[in-house]
Image (cartoon, rainbow, N blue to C red; front, side, top):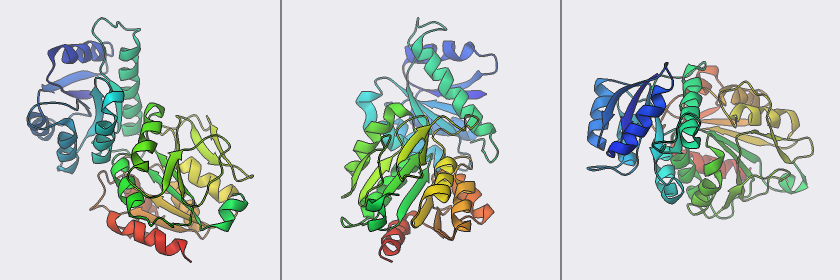
Length: 333
Protein backbone atom coordinates (compact mmCIF):
# COMPACT_ATOMS: atom_id res chain seq x y z
CA UNK A 1 0.00 0.00 0.00
CA UNK A 2 1.00 3.61 -0.56
CA UNK A 3 1.25 5.31 2.82
CA UNK A 4 1.30 8.98 3.77
CA UNK A 5 2.87 10.03 7.08
CA UNK A 6 1.71 13.16 8.90
CA UNK A 7 4.01 14.03 11.81
CA UNK A 8 6.28 16.96 12.67
CA UNK A 9 8.72 14.94 14.81
CA UNK A 10 11.70 13.57 12.81
CA UNK A 11 12.30 10.66 15.22
CA UNK A 12 8.66 9.55 14.98
CA UNK A 13 8.76 9.77 11.18
CA UNK A 14 11.95 7.70 11.07
CA UNK A 15 10.44 5.07 13.39
CA UNK A 16 7.44 4.73 11.09
CA UNK A 17 9.65 4.61 7.99
CA UNK A 18 11.65 1.74 9.47
CA UNK A 19 8.51 -0.15 10.47
CA UNK A 20 6.96 0.25 7.01
CA UNK A 21 10.22 -0.78 5.31
CA UNK A 22 9.88 -4.22 6.90
CA UNK A 23 6.98 -4.93 4.54
CA UNK A 24 7.92 -4.92 0.83
CA UNK A 25 4.26 -4.44 -0.15
CA UNK A 26 4.19 -1.04 1.60
CA UNK A 27 5.97 2.19 0.69
CA UNK A 28 6.02 5.71 2.06
CA UNK A 29 4.46 7.94 -0.59
CA UNK A 30 5.06 11.24 1.19
CA UNK A 31 5.61 12.91 4.57
CA UNK A 32 3.71 15.99 5.77
CA UNK A 33 4.77 17.98 8.83
CA UNK A 34 1.52 19.84 9.53
CA UNK A 35 -2.22 19.66 8.93
CA UNK A 36 -2.49 21.96 5.89
CA UNK A 37 0.31 20.12 4.09
CA UNK A 38 -1.41 16.80 4.80
CA UNK A 39 -4.67 18.02 3.28
CA UNK A 40 -2.85 19.30 0.18
CA UNK A 41 -0.86 16.09 -0.33
CA UNK A 42 -3.93 13.87 0.10
CA UNK A 43 -5.58 15.81 -2.72
CA UNK A 44 -2.52 15.87 -5.00
CA UNK A 45 -1.15 12.36 -4.32
CA UNK A 46 -3.88 10.27 -2.66
CA UNK A 47 -2.40 7.45 -0.55
CA UNK A 48 -4.13 4.22 0.42
CA UNK A 49 -3.73 5.07 4.08
CA UNK A 50 -2.57 8.06 6.13
CA UNK A 51 -0.70 7.68 9.44
CA UNK A 52 -1.91 10.81 11.23
CA UNK A 53 -0.45 12.40 14.35
CA UNK A 54 -2.80 14.34 16.62
CA UNK A 55 -0.72 17.28 17.85
CA UNK A 56 0.90 19.35 15.10
CA UNK A 57 1.52 22.97 14.05
CA UNK A 58 -1.08 25.17 12.30
CA UNK A 59 -4.02 22.82 12.83
CA UNK A 60 -4.08 19.46 14.54
CA UNK A 61 -4.75 15.92 13.36
CA UNK A 62 -8.42 16.13 14.26
CA UNK A 63 -9.00 19.08 11.94
CA UNK A 64 -6.78 17.53 9.25
CA UNK A 65 -8.82 14.32 9.44
CA UNK A 66 -12.05 16.29 9.24
CA UNK A 67 -10.91 18.21 6.13
CA UNK A 68 -9.54 15.13 4.37
CA UNK A 69 -12.72 13.12 4.96
CA UNK A 70 -14.87 16.01 3.70
CA UNK A 71 -12.76 16.48 0.57
CA UNK A 72 -13.45 15.05 -2.87
CA UNK A 73 -10.71 12.45 -2.31
CA UNK A 74 -11.07 11.04 1.23
CA UNK A 75 -8.78 8.21 2.29
CA UNK A 76 -8.30 5.77 5.15
CA UNK A 77 -6.76 7.39 8.22
CA UNK A 78 -4.99 5.65 11.12
CA UNK A 79 -4.15 7.83 14.11
CA UNK A 80 -0.52 7.20 15.12
CA UNK A 81 0.46 9.28 18.12
CA UNK A 82 2.38 9.09 21.38
CA UNK A 83 0.58 8.44 24.67
CA UNK A 84 -2.74 7.22 23.29
CA UNK A 85 -4.17 6.94 26.80
CA UNK A 86 -3.38 10.56 27.66
CA UNK A 87 -4.93 11.70 24.37
CA UNK A 88 -8.06 9.53 24.55
CA UNK A 89 -10.52 12.37 23.99
CA UNK A 90 -8.55 13.54 20.94
CA UNK A 91 -8.60 9.99 19.57
CA UNK A 92 -12.40 9.83 19.85
CA UNK A 93 -12.74 13.27 18.24
CA UNK A 94 -10.57 12.11 15.33
CA UNK A 95 -12.56 8.88 14.98
CA UNK A 96 -15.71 10.94 15.02
CA UNK A 97 -14.26 12.91 12.11
CA UNK A 98 -13.63 9.71 10.14
CA UNK A 99 -10.38 8.10 11.34
CA UNK A 100 -10.60 4.30 11.42
CA UNK A 101 -8.44 3.41 14.41
CA UNK A 102 -5.51 4.51 16.57
CA UNK A 103 -2.17 3.11 17.71
CA UNK A 104 0.89 4.32 19.62
CA UNK A 105 3.85 5.66 17.64
CA UNK A 106 6.51 2.95 17.21
CA UNK A 107 9.77 3.44 19.05
CA UNK A 108 13.15 3.68 17.33
CA UNK A 109 15.24 0.65 18.18
CA UNK A 110 12.14 -1.47 18.76
CA UNK A 111 13.24 -3.92 16.04
CA UNK A 112 11.07 -6.16 13.90
CA UNK A 113 9.80 -8.09 16.91
CA UNK A 114 9.08 -5.00 19.02
CA UNK A 115 5.55 -4.57 20.31
CA UNK A 116 5.01 -1.05 18.96
CA UNK A 117 6.27 -2.00 15.49
CA UNK A 118 4.11 -5.14 15.39
CA UNK A 119 1.05 -3.21 16.52
CA UNK A 120 1.47 -0.55 13.84
CA UNK A 121 1.92 -3.13 11.07
CA UNK A 122 -1.05 -5.14 12.37
CA UNK A 123 -3.26 -2.04 12.23
CA UNK A 124 -2.10 -1.26 8.69
CA UNK A 125 -2.83 -4.86 7.65
CA UNK A 126 -6.27 -4.70 9.24
CA UNK A 127 -7.17 -1.53 7.36
CA UNK A 128 -5.77 -3.05 4.16
CA UNK A 129 -8.15 -6.00 4.53
CA UNK A 130 -11.00 -3.58 5.10
CA UNK A 131 -10.13 -1.66 1.92
CA UNK A 132 -9.91 -4.88 -0.10
CA UNK A 133 -13.20 -6.30 1.21
CA UNK A 134 -16.29 -6.20 -1.06
CA UNK A 135 -17.78 -2.74 -0.81
CA UNK A 136 -14.55 -1.28 0.54
CA UNK A 137 -13.35 2.03 -0.79
CA UNK A 138 -9.88 3.30 -1.53
CA UNK A 139 -10.18 6.26 0.54
CA UNK A 140 -34.23 -10.66 25.49
CA UNK A 141 -35.07 -11.18 28.98
CA UNK A 142 -38.15 -10.05 30.90
CA UNK A 143 -36.55 -6.69 31.60
CA UNK A 144 -36.16 -5.89 27.91
CA UNK A 145 -39.70 -6.99 27.03
CA UNK A 146 -40.99 -4.68 29.74
CA UNK A 147 -39.45 -1.67 28.03
CA UNK A 148 -39.38 -0.44 24.46
CA UNK A 149 -37.90 -2.17 21.42
CA UNK A 150 -34.22 -3.02 21.40
CA UNK A 151 -32.26 -0.38 19.46
CA UNK A 152 -29.29 -1.96 17.64
CA UNK A 153 -26.76 0.51 16.22
CA UNK A 154 -23.81 -0.26 13.95
CA UNK A 155 -21.08 2.25 13.07
CA UNK A 156 -17.49 2.54 11.90
CA UNK A 157 -15.47 5.53 10.62
CA UNK A 158 -17.13 8.71 11.88
CA UNK A 159 -19.18 6.68 14.33
CA UNK A 160 -18.11 8.20 17.66
CA UNK A 161 -19.32 11.66 16.66
CA UNK A 162 -22.55 10.30 15.18
CA UNK A 163 -23.20 8.20 18.29
CA UNK A 164 -22.58 11.19 20.56
CA UNK A 165 -25.06 13.23 18.52
CA UNK A 166 -27.78 10.57 18.68
CA UNK A 167 -27.33 9.57 22.31
CA UNK A 168 -27.05 13.19 23.38
CA UNK A 169 -30.38 13.99 21.73
CA UNK A 170 -32.37 11.16 23.31
CA UNK A 171 -34.60 12.08 26.29
CA UNK A 172 -33.65 11.02 29.81
CA UNK A 173 -36.75 8.80 29.98
CA UNK A 174 -35.91 6.91 26.77
CA UNK A 175 -37.44 3.53 27.59
CA UNK A 176 -35.57 1.17 25.29
CA UNK A 177 -32.34 -0.83 25.58
CA UNK A 178 -29.53 0.14 23.19
CA UNK A 179 -26.68 -2.06 21.98
CA UNK A 180 -23.90 -0.48 19.90
CA UNK A 181 -21.37 -2.23 17.68
CA UNK A 182 -18.70 0.32 16.75
CA UNK A 183 -15.54 -0.73 14.92
CA UNK A 184 -13.00 0.19 17.61
CA UNK A 185 -9.95 -1.48 19.10
CA UNK A 186 -10.62 -3.13 22.46
CA UNK A 187 -7.99 -0.83 24.02
CA UNK A 188 -10.26 2.16 23.42
CA UNK A 189 -13.70 0.65 24.09
CA UNK A 190 -13.78 1.45 27.82
CA UNK A 191 -12.63 5.01 27.22
CA UNK A 192 -15.15 5.47 24.42
CA UNK A 193 -17.98 4.25 26.64
CA UNK A 194 -16.94 6.74 29.32
CA UNK A 195 -16.68 9.53 26.74
CA UNK A 196 -20.14 8.74 25.31
CA UNK A 197 -21.55 8.51 28.84
CA UNK A 198 -20.56 12.14 29.29
CA UNK A 199 -22.44 13.17 26.12
CA UNK A 200 -25.90 11.87 27.10
CA UNK A 201 -28.44 11.66 29.92
CA UNK A 202 -28.56 7.88 29.44
CA UNK A 203 -26.11 5.42 30.98
CA UNK A 204 -23.41 4.17 28.59
CA UNK A 205 -21.06 1.32 29.49
CA UNK A 206 -19.20 -1.52 27.81
CA UNK A 207 -21.08 -4.77 27.22
CA UNK A 208 -19.94 -7.64 29.42
CA UNK A 209 -20.39 -11.35 28.79
CA UNK A 210 -23.81 -12.34 30.18
CA UNK A 211 -25.26 -8.80 30.24
CA UNK A 212 -28.95 -8.34 29.44
CA UNK A 213 -30.00 -5.27 27.44
CA UNK A 214 -31.80 -2.87 29.81
CA UNK A 215 -34.13 0.06 29.10
CA UNK A 216 -32.32 3.39 29.20
CA UNK A 217 -28.85 1.81 29.08
CA UNK A 218 -26.55 1.81 26.04
CA UNK A 219 -24.10 -1.11 25.90
CA UNK A 220 -21.00 -0.82 23.69
CA UNK A 221 -19.26 -3.87 22.20
CA UNK A 222 -15.93 -3.96 23.99
CA UNK A 223 -13.62 -6.59 22.50
CA UNK A 224 -12.14 -7.64 19.16
CA UNK A 225 -14.55 -10.59 19.18
CA UNK A 226 -18.06 -10.49 17.74
CA UNK A 227 -21.03 -9.62 19.97
CA UNK A 228 -24.17 -11.76 19.76
CA UNK A 229 -27.51 -12.06 21.52
CA UNK A 230 -28.28 -15.57 22.80
CA UNK A 231 -31.56 -17.48 23.03
CA UNK A 232 -31.60 -16.61 26.72
CA UNK A 233 -31.55 -12.89 25.88
CA UNK A 234 -28.01 -12.32 27.17
CA UNK A 235 -24.98 -10.98 25.34
CA UNK A 236 -21.99 -13.14 24.49
CA UNK A 237 -18.69 -12.70 22.69
CA UNK A 238 -17.50 -15.17 20.05
CA UNK A 239 -14.49 -15.56 17.75
CA UNK A 240 -16.67 -16.97 14.99
CA UNK A 241 -16.95 -16.23 12.15
CA UNK A 242 -13.19 -15.79 11.98
CA UNK A 243 -12.95 -14.83 8.28
CA UNK A 244 -14.21 -11.24 8.43
CA UNK A 245 -12.29 -7.96 8.11
CA UNK A 246 -14.62 -6.39 10.67
CA UNK A 247 -14.19 -7.23 14.36
CA UNK A 248 -16.61 -6.82 16.02
CA UNK A 249 -19.00 -7.26 13.10
CA UNK A 250 -22.29 -5.38 12.87
CA UNK A 251 -23.68 -8.10 10.59
CA UNK A 252 -22.99 -10.80 13.18
CA UNK A 253 -24.89 -8.90 15.87
CA UNK A 254 -27.81 -7.92 13.64
CA UNK A 255 -28.17 -11.50 12.40
CA UNK A 256 -28.20 -12.84 15.96
CA UNK A 257 -31.16 -10.58 16.70
CA UNK A 258 -33.16 -12.04 13.82
CA UNK A 259 -32.45 -15.51 15.21
CA UNK A 260 -32.91 -15.05 18.95
CA UNK A 261 -34.51 -11.75 20.05
CA UNK A 262 -38.21 -12.24 20.94
CA UNK A 263 -39.29 -8.60 20.96
CA UNK A 264 -39.21 -5.67 18.56
CA UNK A 265 -35.97 -4.32 17.12
CA UNK A 266 -35.00 -0.99 15.58
CA UNK A 267 -31.85 -1.40 13.48
CA UNK A 268 -29.68 1.64 12.75
CA UNK A 269 -26.64 1.73 10.44
CA UNK A 270 -24.44 4.81 10.67
CA UNK A 271 -21.41 6.23 8.88
CA UNK A 272 -18.57 3.83 8.08
CA UNK A 273 -16.24 2.40 5.46
CA UNK A 274 -17.11 -0.85 3.69
CA UNK A 275 -20.44 -2.67 3.89
CA UNK A 276 -20.54 -4.29 7.33
CA UNK A 277 -24.08 -4.23 8.69
CA UNK A 278 -25.86 -3.86 5.35
CA UNK A 279 -26.79 -7.54 5.01
CA UNK A 280 -27.73 -7.77 8.68
CA UNK A 281 -29.91 -4.66 8.39
CA UNK A 282 -31.62 -6.23 5.38
CA UNK A 283 -32.31 -9.37 7.45
CA UNK A 284 -33.86 -7.22 10.18
CA UNK A 285 -36.10 -5.45 7.69
CA UNK A 286 -37.15 -8.74 6.08
CA UNK A 287 -38.30 -9.90 9.52
CA UNK A 288 -40.52 -6.84 9.81
CA UNK A 289 -38.36 -4.68 12.06
CA UNK A 290 -37.93 -0.94 11.52
CA UNK A 291 -34.55 -0.12 9.96
CA UNK A 292 -32.74 3.21 9.53
CA UNK A 293 -29.62 4.19 7.58
CA UNK A 294 -27.79 7.51 7.86
CA UNK A 295 -27.93 9.64 4.73
CA UNK A 296 -24.96 10.55 2.54
CA UNK A 297 -24.91 14.26 3.35
CA UNK A 298 -24.31 13.72 7.08
CA UNK A 299 -22.08 10.61 6.89
CA UNK A 300 -18.35 11.11 7.46
CA UNK A 301 -17.82 8.03 5.26
CA UNK A 302 -20.75 6.93 3.10
CA UNK A 303 -19.88 3.25 2.78
CA UNK A 304 -21.92 1.09 5.16
CA UNK A 305 -25.15 3.10 4.91
CA UNK A 306 -24.74 3.34 1.13
CA UNK A 307 -24.51 -0.47 0.93
CA UNK A 308 -27.66 -0.70 3.03
CA UNK A 309 -29.49 1.74 0.77
CA UNK A 310 -28.40 -0.19 -2.32
CA UNK A 311 -29.74 -3.43 -0.84
CA UNK A 312 -33.03 -1.84 0.14
CA UNK A 313 -32.18 -2.67 3.75
CA UNK A 314 -33.29 0.66 5.21
CA UNK A 315 -36.94 1.47 5.66
CA UNK A 316 -35.89 5.07 6.33
CA UNK A 317 -32.79 6.98 5.20
CA UNK A 318 -32.36 9.95 7.52
CA UNK A 319 -29.92 12.78 8.21
CA UNK A 320 -28.07 12.36 11.49
CA UNK A 321 -30.01 15.14 13.19
CA UNK A 322 -33.34 13.33 12.72
CA UNK A 323 -32.38 9.85 13.90
CA UNK A 324 -32.74 10.47 17.65
CA UNK A 325 -36.23 11.92 17.18
CA UNK A 326 -37.22 8.93 15.07
CA UNK A 327 -35.95 6.53 17.74
CA UNK A 328 -37.80 8.38 20.50
CA UNK A 329 -41.04 8.29 18.51
CA UNK A 330 -40.70 4.59 17.66
CA UNK A 331 -39.86 3.67 21.26
CA UNK A 332 -43.17 5.18 22.41
CA UNK A 333 -45.25 2.99 20.07
